Length: 281
Image (tube, rainbow, N blue to C red):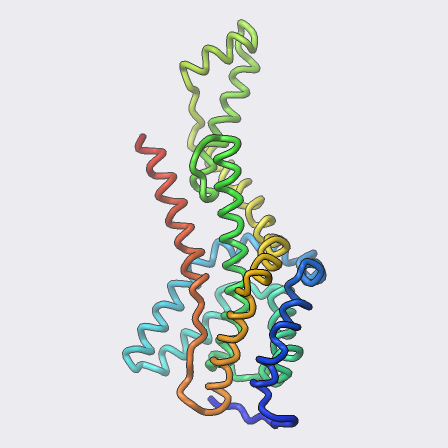
């Protein structure tokens, strides 16, 4: 659905392209990231683990909607796109980013009132979700580094890390309570490795999931400035401008590509494969 907009001093989309560098510096530099993450404090800390758990469902619905659109079942695809917003819990940080992009970058605040599920509305929400996906990828990289440095193991996520952490905790407790002392206990359990039970691994997964969600909520403090320096934020915003310009001008819509959403789910698959390979060893 095309949205009417008033052109005041030239093409608003060309003017947005002209100020993209200034917007990236203001919003995603080190100082900008600190200001942005003040919105994370509060209820966003409780929403984060729920949204991380629902992210795979969100992606599956998005893929199904794209397939329906390719089959020219556009009404069904639009219905699924409208449903996308209800799958995840809206965060204060996400709403703030959408507002800044619409009002400060594009300077088209009426975008926030666009029809739910329209290409412009979906592009704006996808942009916000893309940044969340990058935070998940950053958390996966941190998990890999922790696993490599501390456990000498490949741990790209909670599922693969939990058994390793649970086994380490069980081993430490067993060594501490060994009847001949900790030194002999360390030698004994170095040969006869104690294993964690299913319930112990389950509790470890729950605790690590909460910890990973908190890391994900603040991962943008690291990821945003790096992406700004590498020009990733700039290119992503320019793709967003192209997509929204096509929709608002009434031309054939250009969907906003969100490759990061797929990369984030690839890390989930990588995590599951790493956990399975450990179990089969």
